[in-house]
Image 1 (cartoon, rainbow, N blue to C red):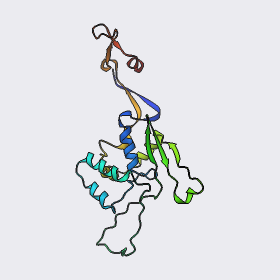
Image 2: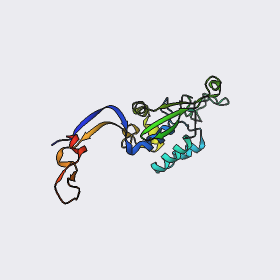
Image 3: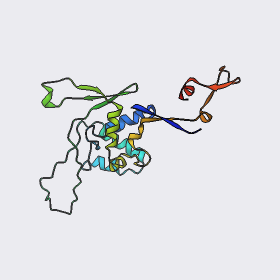
Image 4: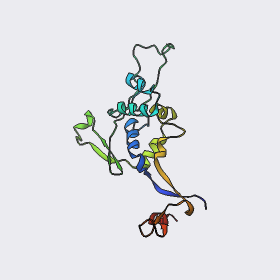
Length: 198
């Protein structure tokens, strides 16, 4: 037989990657999909130069997870715009407030703390569920350059691939069989879940 697939009605977080998804959400801006820090931060620049991708991902995540606001570009007052000796690095962040991400079971929750201006009107932080479909859309916006800076790979480990949209269905010959009587000696058969896939 051939492999089949089931297209899910709504995306779901992959249970094996939910902690990684949480870390990526804590690294990037929830509005524009850019990394919350930019090259003007020395510690971030140093973290980006780490060669090992796993170490780089953790270093960048540690720096970004405490940031509550996405960095915006502030032009240098003393820099001549026509001066070509110092290349300008534009981050292009949006300046929006960032949620604190919490994992509860297989769900991710975002808590937005109110800023100083809106604190008088509404002192309570806003807490809402982060839906896999919203996170999928956000992850698709991340540029290849940002993915490389984070220590992921645009060819083999794009963040949106950690969210399941399609479930593969294997043909009967490759499905695992279980012992029907539970002893491991007797008849072999398919378990309930494997049977359901058919």
